[in-house]
Image 1 (cartoon, rainbow, N blue to C red):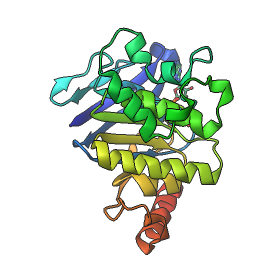
Image 2: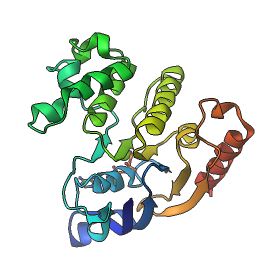
Image 3: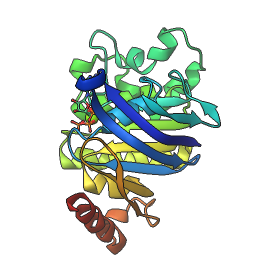
Image 4: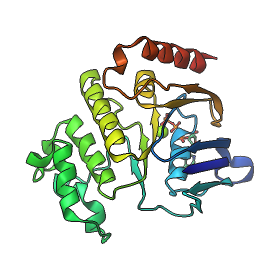
Length: 243
Ligand SMILES: Nc1ncnc2c1ncn2[C@@H]1O[C@H](COP(=O)(O)OP(=O)(O)OP(=O)(O)O)[C@@H](O)[C@H]1O
Ligand SMILES: [Mg+2]
């Protein structure tokens, strides 16, 4: 369970302070998925970085499985927009960065993860030798390599073409079902939120607050995009963003 309570994130001090997140609360149970959608610059990344233990909230608390979050933790993985690959390291090394940094986990898992993501054949290549979609998948392999119970994604598919995007969204859905992590997905993309979020929180302009939570219980199948329930969720999200 990830429990965010009355979290405020501010940058800078006193009169110069910029408030990015404004007393926001949310909960995500084990194995649940929550998508966060909101205007550009509203504070989405700030909230996610706080949930990853990378920044300390100015006020409020965040706990994971009952323990207060004070630093990054192995069971919480974060995927960034550009995948954060190191250009001088191979696919294998990038995917296994936490191993290289001295954290331990079984190597066999790492190979299995690369195979699962269709990267087994390219593990000796460098990022410059990969397509954009492959790079994003290496970022996913890295995040999966520590078997996280919480997966945070910050616009992981931004600026990909629609087909590649949908193929990787399908992959995210399969991984979420198979690995049963709690998923928190920040996205600009209404259809992505509707495809992957059991609930979708619509955020306000900065500083981020939750304007509305749209329930989306029918998601979870690969053909969901073709259903009336999906179209309905998309419409409700669009209306929520415009309100
Ligand atoms: N390290 C920082 N120092 C000062 N201000 C910051 C810092 N990081 C973010 N901000 C400010 O906080 C606000 C929210 O930024 P944040 O990156 O969380 O928004 P976002 O919703 O993720 O934006 P985007 O849609 O562009 O990804 C913005 O006004 C931004 O300029
Ligand atoms: Mg952001």
